[in-house]
Amino acid sequence: MLTLVGMGLHDCSDITFRGYEAVKSADEVYLDLYTSKMSSSLEELKKFFGKEIKEAKRSDLEEGSRKIIERAKYADVVILVPGDPTIATTHISLLLEAKKAGVNTRVINNASIINAICSLTGLQSYRFGRSATISWHRSRAFIDTIKANLSIDAHTMLFLDLNPPMTIKEAVNRILDLESSFEKHFAVGIARAGSEDAVVKCDQLKNLADFDFGDPLHSLVVLARRLHVVEYECLIYFASAPEELKEWVL
Image (cartoon, rainbow, N blue to C red; front, side, top):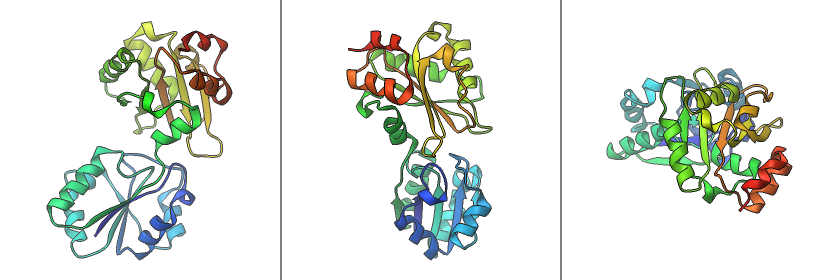
C-alpha cells in the first residue's frame, strides 16, 4: 500500500488524526520537502511520530519513484507531504505509476495553500484562473498566465520558488522587471499561511515590495481588475487594503 498523507500548512500538529494513524502503522515513512516546506524539521517529526522518517528527494519522487513503488508492493509505505498531497503534479504522477504497477493507493487530504489563501483573503475561489510559479529561472511564463487570467477577469495565484524560498519583495521585483505596466496593479501578499503569525496585505504591487512580511514561506495573488463587493470588503478588513481599491469594485 502506498499512502500519501497531507501534513497541513504549518507544523506537525496540523496533521489529521487519520493521517497520524497511517504514519504510526506504516512500515516505511518518507517526507517530501521538495514540493513544499513546513516549520517542523525532520528531527522534530521523528520525535512527534516516534519512528524513523527518511527524506524523499526530488529524484526519489520522480525518476527514482519505481523504488518506492516496488517497496509499496510488499509493505505499507507512507509519504508525508506538506499541505495537501495531491496539489502537486509530482504526487499525481506517483499515484498513477503505482496504480499501473498494481499497487493499492490512498490519499489522506489536508489543508492546502489554495484554500488557505481564500480563507485568509476572502477572495472567492471561483474567481481564480490558472495558477503559476515564479521561479529563480529566467522564465516569463507566469506573466503570460497573469495576462491570460486578466483577460477573463480572474485572479492569479502565484506560488514562489522554494529553493531557496523566494520573498514577496523578490517576486514583485521579478514581475515588474518583466512587465513594468503592472506597477500600480493591486495584489495580495500572504506570509506563513496556516500559522498563528500569518500576514496578509493588499496594495499596489510597487508598494508590496516595500512591505515587511517577515520570514517565508510567501505567496502572492494578482487580483482581477474587477472585484465583487464582498471581496473588496474582505480585503479592507482582512488585508488592510487601501481605499483606492474601491475603484475596482463591480
